[in-house]
Length: 145
Image (cartoon, rainbow, N blue to C red; front, side):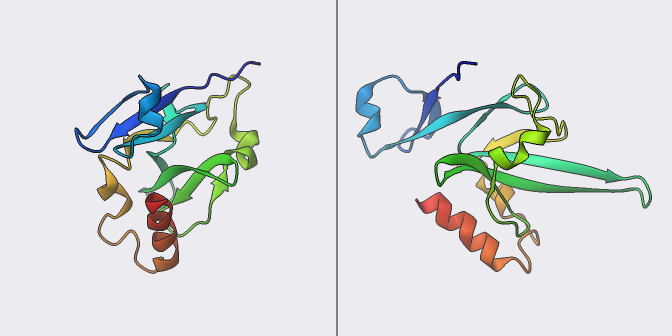
């Protein structure tokens, strides 16, 4: 199976995400280049490095809904996520049991809800990092890289 390689750029001056359109964008410090992971979320939306995904879980026993946000990053040669609730890096390769043969995430509750460029507040909502200072520092360290 051929893997589609797509790149997009974040223009820090105009504050816009767009497909890579010139080789100059690769060396111009005003642009940050991100890559398509090859995966799609529950709604068929492409999952990109720098995206924020949400996983939701409904507990039928106590009628509560929980969710967590994950930042998609490239780390140690692979794509994966870091959760805002204290988890370490989880490579997508460890989640192969969750993937359909066509690369669609089997956990259909995962959906792209934003990017680190425009929706950083999703990773720092009130109380979500409480007690997880190490994970918060890890995520924000990854954002700085």
